[in-house]
Image (tube, rainbow, N blue to C red; front, side):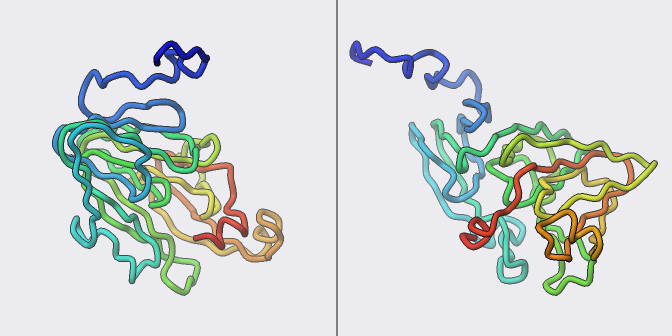
Length: 228
């Protein structure tokens, strides 16, 4: 660093060369991916790269990827190919790496997906119910094996779901859940006026079975909602 002195240059912040290909946490707010071949990431999430990499927006390519016209939301992805390293982040959200093994199935809200290995399969699923116009809640189902980079505003809360009693979560707060759970959407007039800013109508996702659900503590604020 040419003799410049600052705690900015401490080892804590320095990006070291990758020891192995694939995904690692650079820190709690960023994921580093050592690319050898190909990987996928949310469009607009790459903050830096080095090496020989090519980038390509993915449209309907991978298994009807966006379906944006239908869902009104989706997961706009890009593929990153070649040899090199890339760093990904999203508005300083917390980053986590989930190891998915053969036979696992994890459902993640599209807004919480940051990047993933090409060995993972991805499809958009919908949760129906609550008499919602427009169909319901759209999520990404990941199967196969590999690492999935997940982002969460604030510290996530992982709630176990057991056969004893269903768990209800606010649809704006849900990050993801183990895909073997059965899910449905419920509209509750009375609870709505207590849980969320008193609009009198909230929709909860009801989960039943044995597994877990991940929720985030931050709410979509009116300013953020308007920006989307």
